[in-house]
Image 1 (cartoon, rainbow, N blue to C red):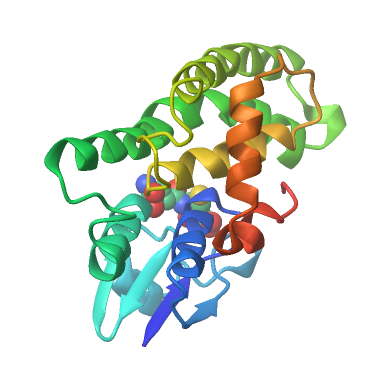
Image 2 (image 1 turned 90 degrees about the horizontal axis):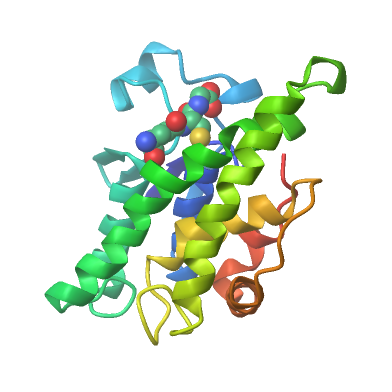
Length: 206
Ligand SMILES: N[C@@H](CCC(=O)N[C@@H](CS)C(=O)NCC(=O)O)C(=O)O
């Protein structure tokens, strides 16, 4: 039986939940992290010594690191489609997952944390504005790629689209002015139309 640990306000937990939904995999879910706590208990630390979410359990096999979990699930249950089987297609999809977590998402962090998780009187307007301005360059990269292909790694939906799709969902939910990105918006519309995306792409940005 699959068991997912982690609060849905975490984009890293959302990646795993969307993948589970996409693959139609029944699973147990336990809210953990943030206000839910749990992550500092010895039992949780035995699962993930980092005390972070998400964690996936698969019949005794324990895995943390959201991208690794997504790749594990996609390989086990959708090898060849969500996780392409040809080397270059797979590397292309993998690249977008790493780009989202290592390059693009950190750029948005100050805008997100400032606007969503910080009381108005404690916000650093300069840091929010700088972060939002820098993220426009990330959105522009997506818009350029998506002018050429309907999905990030080509003609078909793959694991590449999940982290970046969630990041854009978050970006579109921030109360700020954005440069219009028609190709990003069209792609986001395609993602939202997927039954597997409904639950995670309907979440409020919090
Ligand atoms: N690289 C890790 C990062 C995990 C991470 O930083 N998780 C955050 C939420 S996004 C967390 O657990 N924060 C502490 C908490 O929620 O209590 C991954 O992708 O799984």
